[in-house]
Length: 351
Image (cartoon, rainbow, N blue to C red):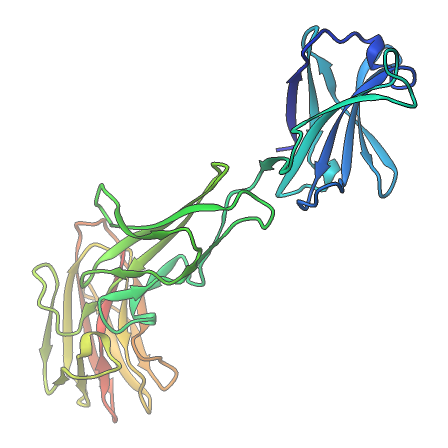
């Protein structure tokens, strides 16, 4: 927003004459940007000059003054705009309100003044919500960080150094299509990697909610996909191997510890699954060029090249899908060149 508005009332009636800054007095708002008591970066003066109520934003360091809107709301009530850009566009600031009067019964040598609050700390205006961060992309494959059905979600939460402070953060997940959110972790310290536990083939919305002590809130949204294993036994997803595939179940670097490998051209692996907007093979690092032809829903769709550049549990051979969440799909991989073995670690279906 462009400005804050501060409204205030006095105990007794204040006339326009009494707000003549030359002969009588004025009101003022002290602005502190770095929580440094008794040193204020700006002062906003409110006075009656040349026939109307005026607001002046003054920078004591540069002696620069700019105008701002000030209005009388009644015999005892006033309102002044605090233009945020004119005071440095702060993330937060503290302020106090004062009255100054040097006419009778006071004097220039002994002026009268009053201030609110009359003790520290000053009133805090926290303008910004907590800052949320994550090093992962908007859609994340769990196997980029984990070989099982857990995923350490990297995140950070922080609040403005001079602000009200972080009150609470919460990480929640929700399966695609579900109606409720599940609480994963929460706290008031904003650094860590709370662990999300998923199911094989599960796709999740993940969100981080945070609030500061002033009531400002922020939200970070991500999507997390857990692959189907190469040896999945799910009811809606299956894989059928034809040929001389060898399977292991104790690999420390592969998803759920299993892989399926073939070095024979013409061997096939057929994945059947439902829904999704994209499907990717989850492969493993290979020494040489290991190739397989892809056929999606009976349509030839290119060649998967599993080379040394393929990271363990990395997505390769991604294909776009048509249809909706209930559409059935069949992906067939046919080994075409695999001297050292073409290895399948799983199947990633992105909603």
